[in-house]
Image (cartoon, rainbow, N blue to C red):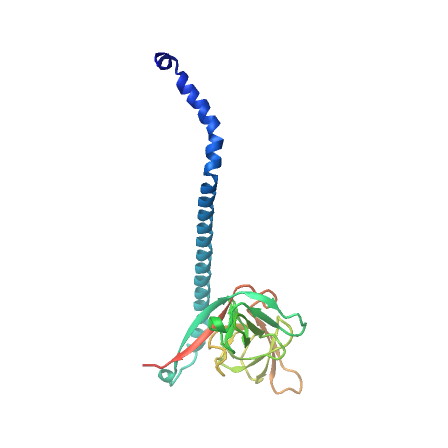
Length: 252
């Protein structure tokens, strides 16, 4: 004990022993440490996923609120004499992912990962952060088929915000082009004018952006203008989308 107190032999021995014992201690505690690390990793991953979903939903809500600007701008240019008699339409937005696209060349359809089990109904409108992309044509339990606005069999009631004129925009089979065929030649519509959903027919809620006029003219012998409409949504590369679920409640 005296010698140890003078030269510290025991302290040195303990140091060497601790070095030799470290691998044993590490191996013994490895399963427990691995399990703790795995739990922490899972917890962090779950938190990141939840946060990502929350931010995406907030982003969608903000962009959908921004789209209401088009509607407000159009409404400011006309008066609704019976505004108080209009039903209160409450909209909900259901985020969805695309799981497949149609393999048929002339069929512009996509399949999303939300179905009747999630509250999706036949006819629900579908949009992305830029504007309307189509509507649900088949609601299955866990998925739904969506017909894009560019499909040859698609038609969407629209309104030109600058003039307040209402018409139908038809799919052309070109994902970058829609066609409007019923605007009279004396229309004051101009290239670059914003086109929104009119709400007629009830399938598409009123005031959502559809596209802008890219070309307009009159062909000889035609009674209406020929108007080309460029969709705001990039139908060639659709990423984030949501289903617009609209319910009607009585005004108090």
